[in-house]
Image (tube, rainbow, N blue to C red; front, side, top):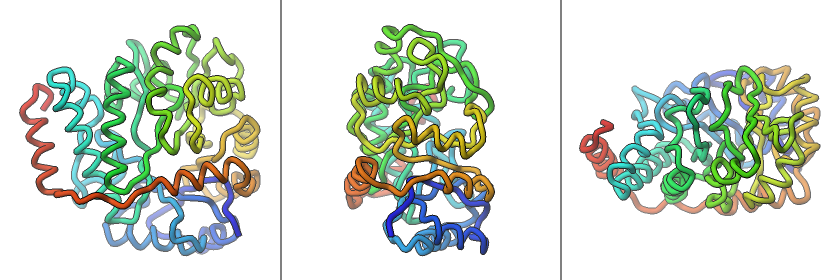
Length: 340
């Protein structure tokens, strides 16, 4: 039996009986972990094993948001702290090679942490380009305010993940940087012209269009589609994400339970698939919502299946890496800068 085109979270540090039955029956393509799912390395490793066992797929992708800074699901005392993206951007401005090296080392170290646990996908890098007055939901997670700089640092981050055997997810395509609201809580609307967006927000994603997976932005770009956020806009997916940006990999929604989207969870799920997203992401682990998402999710087939298969096939074995030396070098780079 194949997989359904959704990625699901679960409620806690272990699987409930209902969750086990649900996963066996509905067969999600993958899973995503949050702080509520994490206690110790051995517990996470066992949870990851059980998730894959439930869907009878030892290669089922397990995702996490492990960026560093404010967005770090694995944290002390069992895992180290990593700097937010803005630190790499500030270091880049002082010493470009040092900034790129630090970005690479941080993501390579993160990849090693994830690989220890069996986690195979990190929702990273960000290519969002903030502007003055935008909401702090991106804030210091971003690498900078220049599209070229953001793309270059995002590529260094990508390289670190890939060389550590972890697949990247590019986010939040085609850009969350201008949003004046947090899409977890409300629907942001961006009124910038298409020509300006093409030179800034979209431009940061274009050099990263070869990445295997990307996550949409729950943001309205009124100059393109005043009625729908990118996640549920056929116009933005076809003309911008697949068109001018040129991304042809697996396209997943941001979390379908976020308040930026309207309608019931089932209605949101239908809308996401109707406009050309390949995969729905559901994060909060609420069982009734998981069931509703699964009820509206098709089996992976056609081009969506091909994209999913290509994404997983692109994952490489980790290259040799000295973690102790890598961490020491990362700390040295950051200590030696004005952003320590």
